[in-house]
Image 1 (cartoon, rainbow, N blue to C red):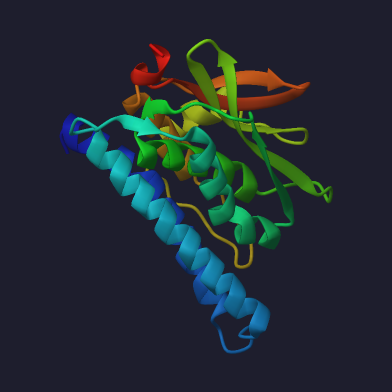
Image 2 (image 1 turned 30 degrees about the horizontal axis):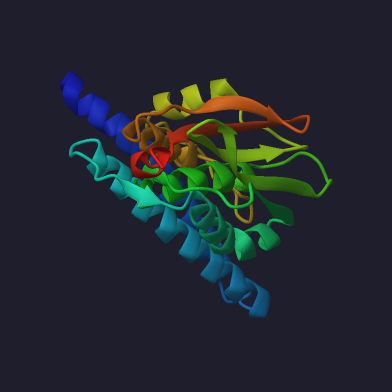
Amino acid sequence: MSNTETDKFRQLSPLLLDLQARFLQIRTLAEPDNVDKEALLNIQLLSQHALMTLDYALFAANVLQTKMPLTSISAAAAAREVADNLDQLAKSYDVELGLDITPKMELIFANEAAVKGALYGLASSLMTVRQTTDKKLRIVIAAQETLPNIQRLGIYSPDIMIKPSAIKLARLLSGCARTIAPNEIHHSGLGLLVSDQLVQALGSKLMRFVHRGQKGVGFYVPMSAQLSFL
């Protein structure tokens, strides 16, 4: 296998691992002894999450090869839509999902699908990682004006945090075999990988930040050039 083929395989492997985990979960939930109202709801949620993650992953793969169109969009609206999309999934993981949006935000110059995909990847990665505590977790999706003509989008939490090493690991994931136990949520790093690639396509990068004493990770985008001259 050539180096180019190996690189392509490494980029695909997180996606394959994530799909493997989701479909094994769905298969377990769909077994006759497990099919009840709650199981059917979990099957629906897992399917929706897997398909949305796959959509954003394919979009990320495409924008790496083509020039992504940019336009004036509302970061606040994008953050609200991502929160709505993740609301039921958060409840199934017993995660409290919040929103922190600066009032009356101006438009930014970006790509709407990339912004939503980056936020979705960050939030869902933090939400679905296996936890070792019984404490109910809180995750906040944020859209904030931080500097003149700049806005910050990302997530923060008082409980858990995405470390830089986790982002680096997501980029380096290879197609290693692993055992997946039924009824457990496994975290392949696909959401982080997708978020990282989409943020790079926007000309930014994932960075750590602190907001109100809580650690976060996000990215910075410029305000719309048309508005900045007003």
